[in-house]
Length: 317
Ligand code: BDR
Ligand code: CA
Image 1 (cartoon, rainbow, N blue to C red):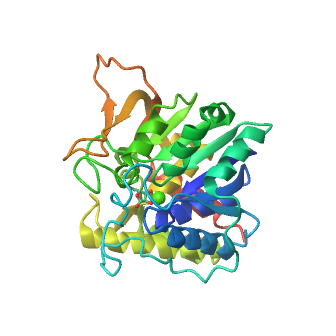
Image 2: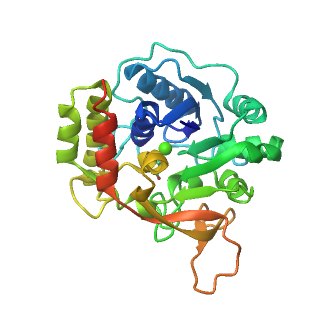
């Protein structure tokens, strides 16, 4: 069993990632930490609790983290679109039953510090939102890096962003935090940027098959991914109509089906001061690249592997 902690800003794709991690027999989801991103912190925390209660896993603790970026209070904080826009693929509150569980003490940063300082085996961290929690942990005690098996991050973009032409939301929402994480010197850092997740598209037919499983996770995944497909179709954000990427879920899929992505070693740095380029992940992919690679970066992903995994994991009652 691989021990992992998810760091989320639950939203619709975070929710699918949580259900995959909680449901896969080879993964031991120790806890989930939350951060402001797709919605304000109280909402991302409540949404996370809703997901775990919905799939009958109130045993997995939820520890709230940062309510704002590490350096730029309020920059940019808000979600991509107004909450009533058809292009809003998350909404403030997920369409799931009200949570019955409550967040746990201590806060995300204290929880991560304690867990990483006391663990007897290395833990995999899977941040799929803005990186403020992990950046703060590293600022307090960089040595906890040695207790980390691998960091698997959903974020960044090489070809083009989604919030600006340059930047992807998770990095854009807290650029200084992302810069600190990429510079931390982790033994193994795997980055799953938009260049990969935009290739792992899920269709309406896939959603019909997930719904037909008749399980809480299958039904929830179908509902949440359909919301994403509707939003992308309204906003034109994907190359193939009536499909959607499920960005965060690709990171969890990689842990148990590594063939879901194709990676190469690249040096990744984050622009924190540009006007047009703030939040851009600058990836040195030149044939004569000079910098030492600090990440395995995914430039391709296979949506059929992701869909097959969801159908298998979400079939379990
Ligand atoms: C990232 O931004 C959020 O909207 C998603 O949850 C994902 O983590 C994609 O840019
Ligand atoms: Ca997310």
